[in-house]
Picture 1 (cartoon, helix red, strand yellow):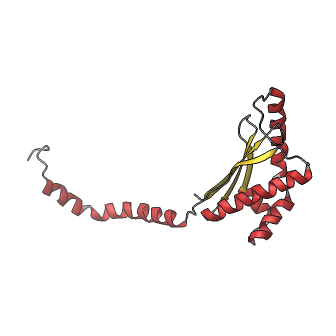
Picture 2 (cartoon, one colour):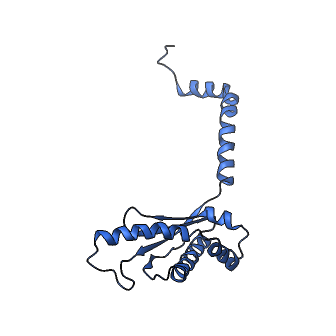
Picture 3 (spheres, helix red, strand yellow):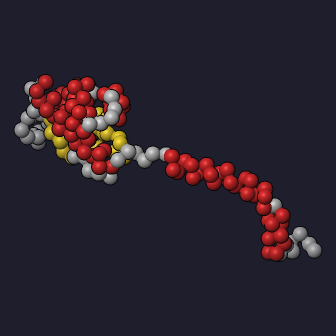
Length: 164
């Protein structure tokens, strides 16, 4: 029998002799995969998008560089307001969440999108409907806080969060 004359029955016989080694190698990998699949929590994002306008009532068609620079600076200010402890505590109380203000703050991200004057608020949760609901409520409370604190009405929600 030459080396090139290996038949299917020979391969099956070789595998049968080595089945214990194959199972010993494959079993831990298979069990690790099952463990990671069952124990890795799924994370859902709720995203609310805001726009900072140069005028409180309309978005003018003639936006100049000064308006864009002002919007970018306001975006930084708004990002800091979104981390307000009182704002986050209102959300915790409203939804009766079992977490602290600090842990909620870690789940909330509020950032400007490039140099556009558009802001995105992101909230991460393990439940898709709660992710969207809490994102929208944080967005609404944020608008109230901006309107009362800075007495500005130049920011609007352009896209609310929907459950993934």
